[in-house]
Image 1 (spheres, rainbow, N blue to C red):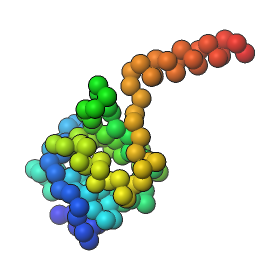
Image 2 (image 1 turned 180 degrees about the horizontal axis):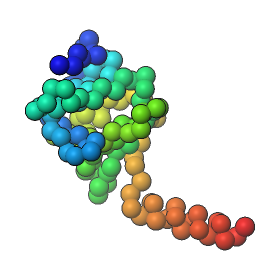
Image 3 (image 1 turned 180 degrees about the vertical axis):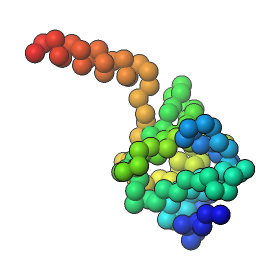
Length: 125
C-alpha cells in the first residue's frame, strides 16, 4: 500500500486516470502533491509532487465544459485525468500550481491552424 505524500488534503474526488488503459479510483489534492489511487489495485497509484509539476492543461469543450485535464511534469511526461467535477479539482490545484501554469490545451482547430501556418512559413524560406 502506498503512503500518501500529503499532510493536509484539500479535495478527495472520484477520478479516472488515462495513463494506459482507463483506471478508476480516487484523486487527492493536498499540500504536497496530487495523488491518484486505483480503487481495485492499491499498488497502482500516481503521486506527483507540486515541485515536479510544470503545468496543467485543461481540455475545454464549448467554452465552459472541461472534459479532462493533463498534469505535465518536468521529467516524467504527462498524466491525463478526469474527475467528477473537473472545475472543482482545478480550483483546488490553483494555489499550489499557480494561475499562470493552468492553461487551456489547444483544440483541433488550433492545431490545424498551427500546422497550416507552419507549412506556409516553410514554403516562404
